[in-house]
Length: 349
Image 1: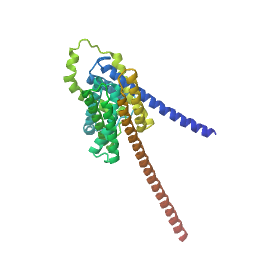
Image 2: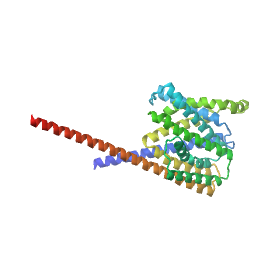
Image 3: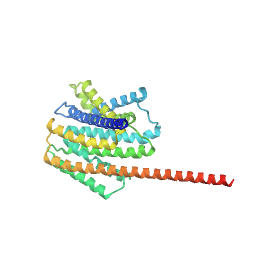
Image 4: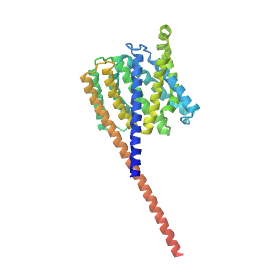
């Protein structure tokens, strides 16, 4: 009874902790998206400088990551040579900077709800680029599922009341660059046995992003900011915004570390629906029935994709366990045969 009770308490504690991590991640992800929209939107805070905002985030995150790794020793750094950094981290940093720049830019032109609907194309982009780089095998049923997601997003776009072609182009570009980054992480880092958690990732990648973003910033935003005498840097707004962005990376570290990447995918779906509801009820963005119908189709496609990935992971894990069991059985048989031959030699003597 006592042992059963303690086991139940332990399981209950793990479940509560998992839900806590999920809740924290959803809250922070939700906050960062809405906060970025508030800062960049011309009808709200009216500071439409996405490159500058991204550079503020990267500077803040790089500084805190340095302190956590080098000063407080909270996270162990990854051993990395200069050649590996230049050949692997730099390309990933370039793609990450482009992804963040374009995704933040999209908030100026599109509603929060419609951006979340367009982000449903991420599995399509990751799978397509994975096939292109030969990291994924082409499967007809998976491609049909990808087409169903794309079809749902297309319906959602058709029903969008505040459709802006440039905004859609920016968001789709952000999705493409982010998907390429995720595939390149597998090719350039994971395949070499290097795993970067969100903190070490920021430590190595954020300075890279700053360098890449500095070039367009000099030509695109710096001249406008230089002429704008009315703007004064608000440390409270940009400080709390950057802190939320960094805390989100910590939350990803906790969520994936304590649960799984699949849990994060499921939590992401919940977050997207919450953002759509918030966008409609609080920001007063128009969400049409066609929007919801299209996104509903895309959502079903994404849910099926996640389910298929889970089944594949379970099958792979079961196969691995079966191989380990066979190897263990083989070793036991060899040991018994060895013992038997030893006894026979002793009896002959």
